[in-house]
Image 1 (tube, rainbow, N blue to C red):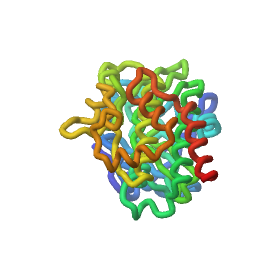
Image 2 (spheres, rainbow, N blue to C red; image 1 turned 30 degrees about the vertical axis):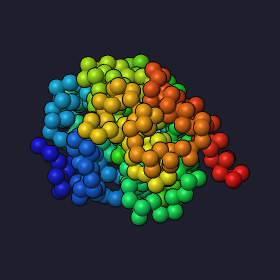
Image 3 (spheres, rainbow, N blue to C red; image 1 turned 45 degrees about the horizontal axis):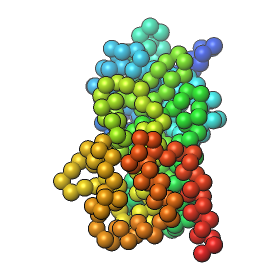
Amino acid sequence: MSVTAGATVWGARLHETEDDDWFEYKVVAPVGNAGGAGAVFTLSPDTEPPLVGKFYNPEVRAGMASDREAALRIIMPALHRDGLNQTLDFASWPRRILFDLKEPPAADLHKHVIGFTMEMLVGTKSLNTLLGKDIDRKNLTRERTIHIAITLADQLAKMHRHPWGFIFGDMSPMNIHITKDFSKVLFIDTDSFQFDNGAFDCKLSGLTPDYSSPGGRAAVTANRQMTATHDDFVLAILIYQLLMRDLGFECHPFTLDGEDPDDVIDRRHFPMDAGDTNNFMKDAYAQLPDDIREAFTHSFTKDTPVTALQWIPLLTNYRRSLWRS
């Protein structure tokens, strides 16, 4: 059964070489959902920094109870949270693992996992919100838009270079948050990341519709390891959305009348290059620098997209050109 307001849960700060540290929480009030995985609640007592609990739905919990490895996707990052917070401090890593009782037997630990605590996001907006209505984009200049795109690329490159070889995977605009001053980009939904730390190989469990890569859906269904190429492809989608929204168009690069964008992605059919968009969008797109448009064409139509690392100088030069104009 799902966790509800008023419930008592136990959070464990896991340690490799010493006893785990247990703490009692009261579940207070819902603050949002966690996609199809569950819900997010505030917790009592108050802590510094403020924390929330992400609680899994019964289906996800049952999967963890029957498969120990399913629980390791949050247990391993929580166990190594200090190191991860130092090297990848822009991601919202699990802090304490939440259980339905205190100190269950070690062999049955995975059967009692119900979620985890994470730092509460205060004063941020999802990238999805910033791609939306004008009222949510107040003070978002072109230079700040490009800064967000550069930061996205830089942080993704750092994830790919990490010894665990992190793949964001479900890199939708809902899983990316931006601070109020647009200076920082935060990655959430870290419990869905793919990684291999030598002790445990954790694959992706799902993708958000419209944010796949060619063959990505089939790879997830077949439980195959994804590569950084998937993230790089989706990064290009997000950068396209950011830059086109700055030019006045809230659009996805693979929108085609009567077709599922993920099917268009699988065909590597880029509507803008194919002439399948209206003249207003074409004229706006033509305002982007030639090398940026070439990067989109390459990313969306070739086997290997422009990498996160390669996007950084392209976008940096675009931002510098604004200063010269």
